[in-house]
Length: 164
Image (cartoon, rainbow, N blue to C red; front, side, top):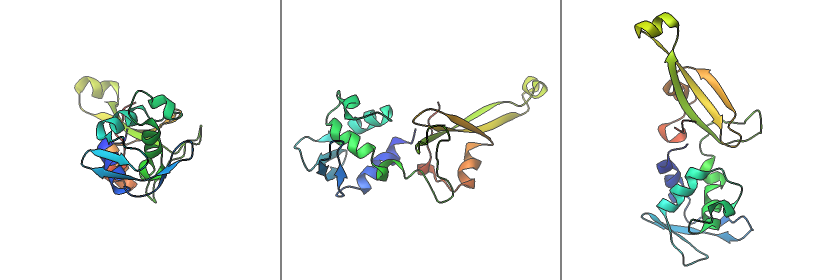
């Protein structure tokens, strides 16, 4: 999953901009330290609430976050393209061939490249896995995650380290 600190950073950057709730209500918010203050309520939402909600994504709607404070605000902010689509660059944008989803995560898998090399512990094969966050369809590419990121121009904050 995308490092939550980079998600929180994007939330802070977009403070003051208009967001829309699932049911259509529009709001803005301010961020003071680790607390987000939506314009349409006196309820303050902590960074921890956002992190817990982010760990559950993707979800169908705010109802899946009812045990957290301010589910309509959590859902509206975390599913807004300004918050989650900044994982793409001009060189890399993801579209799942199975479901059409545009939200992905990356992970690295290493293993022995052959029986003899495994026995002698001489070499390992490395693969980068790109997984759809919606349907979990996964494609594998030969090579280390670092080289995959640098080839596509992805910075440390523009990739996800979720290991699915």
